[in-house]
Length: 418
Picture 1 (spheres, rainbow, N blue to C red):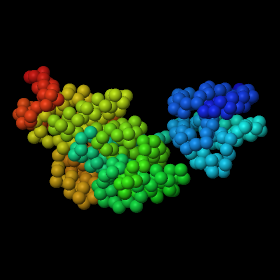
Picture 2: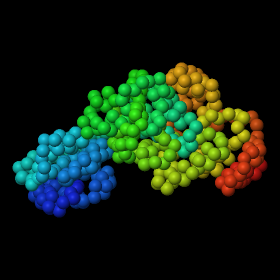
Picture 3: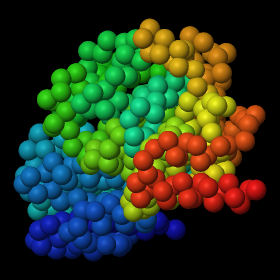
Picture 4: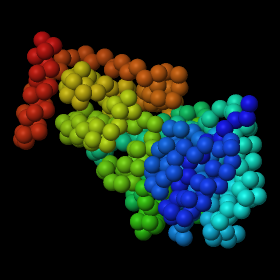
């Protein structure tokens, strides 16, 4: 039985829409699922329907549409993307093919040319009947809404801990320092990838990465501050997708603010590792970040909380903090200020230079929980030998309304346990 080929057509010009509809209607084995002038709607429906092909009519300003070509080709690898245009210049054809298009259709469409494209779509669909979807690496964003919690330190050591092809992406565009954490001197950066994205291939991308070891490479923050100003959220999406095609793990060190670039990274990450310390301002900041995540529509299953610089002398209880935040903690990293600072100053990640140190062992357990087969069950907190004495902590501060609410919440948790 001959297979029916399904199509989605994107065209912002009515003349092109009618012409493509007529051309598809002339083939008995073609079914037009949707005709739209809305790029985002086409992308959403392509993800949902997985048609045999998406035909995209390129307007005079074709760059935004070529980005869509790339997105669909990455997210829907079993769907052929066909570009169509009345301007069939060699440069436009080349750019569309580099973006991920399988073929190019000149408009107005001649019957024999359309028949050739239709046959190629049929062949591509047949080849992909039993083909599994293209694998994409896992993207983990490491985030803290408050500076000084050790975000970059944890991101670096998590990436080093993976015994698999991993890339570390420094999204602190104005002040990235991951090269220092790894003891590297990058020649190229994120800005170079964005500037040359139109002609990017495997070889060029490899040149822009700075290798640290056999399994780990760094895509550094811009080397010159002014070049960071040209980076837009869409560039973040494109680069993350490129890296996911080539690496099993993408670890992203994000800024501490909810700016558009950070949100773009958080949107496209599979999981967000939120780092906090057990201090009032860090806990309050984390709760506000979780509220922002809720407003952004992120499911709580996407969020993982990790406590950094844990010490038995900290007078806060895990269960009380979890009740206040409304989220469980998946791991604890013990405090070892001297070892952490030495590793940063020497440019030697702690999990490499001191693999048996307590901090290194904690980070490896968290890495196994996130990337390995360890699942998502929270790791147990280190045992604390003494009872929390919460009131003394909170009374050392001048209370704001939020401080009072936090103290009441934690005091209530203490009473609940009594």
